[in-house]
Amino acid sequence: MLSYITWNFNPDLISSPITIRWYGLMFAIGFFIGYQIVSRMFRHEGMPSRWLDLLLLWMVGATIIGARLGHVVFYEWDKYSQNPIEILYIWNGGLASHGGTIALIIAMLLFSWITVKRNPVWICDRVIVPIALVAGLIRLGNLANSEIFGHATTMPWGFKFVRSAEWVNEFAPAACHPTQIYEALCYFAIFALLMWMYWRRNAGERKGLLTGTGLFLIFTSRFFIEFVKNVQVDFERNMTLDMGQWLSLPFMAIGLALIIYAFASKPFQLSYPDKFPDKPQK
Image (cartoon, rainbow, N blue to C red):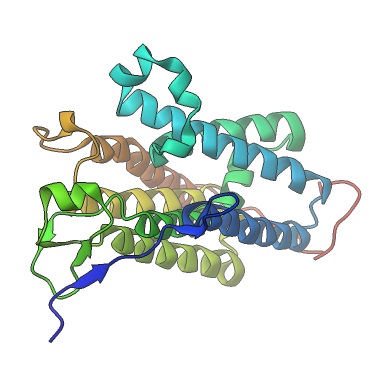
């Protein structure tokens, strides 16, 4: 009976003449599908199509910049403060989902105030749905890169990440928890739940419910999976809770607060013309 899985997956989708990695492809697929989902939501609610391209630019820029700065500030400030130019070298790795989330919230605030001129919670309730999908796809990209895996395990689904220097130096020949898969499955399940809530239960009519549910479930699952995940940097080794867990707690609290707020507030009624008007519905 199989007692472990040898993971020898090539992270490069294309190696020549340019290198394209599965990780980058997962990002691209996530944003493409996310664009289609939000486009359908906008059409469903009669929102202007001209908002979509601007929204995509805000989200892509915020995700990449925020995730990079999040890693720099939260995990390796000592290193990058001495060599600030290396902050730009994102191809060397180093993205933090918590930083990306913070940047996305800021971007949605600015997008709402500058372009949409609506309550920012409205747009957050729409984009949180594909964000859960993108988060899952990114974790599959981490799996392709043989990175961000867990502690040694004797479970039959343990992975031997033979392409990872970290695994070779610290864990070989033991198998490790494929925490990338654990997180991806959680995020895909949350994505399915949010889709059901929006399309079948009209959850978009309760301000903050989708955003709160997404934030609470995404970061709660992240919090507990961190217990079997390896630390990202050395200073975390002596921490009771690692940096990822401490950073998850505020988002869990915000998510729970939004859920309570959504049910404490009176829902509003949306008309669903299922077409793009020239102007947003009043």
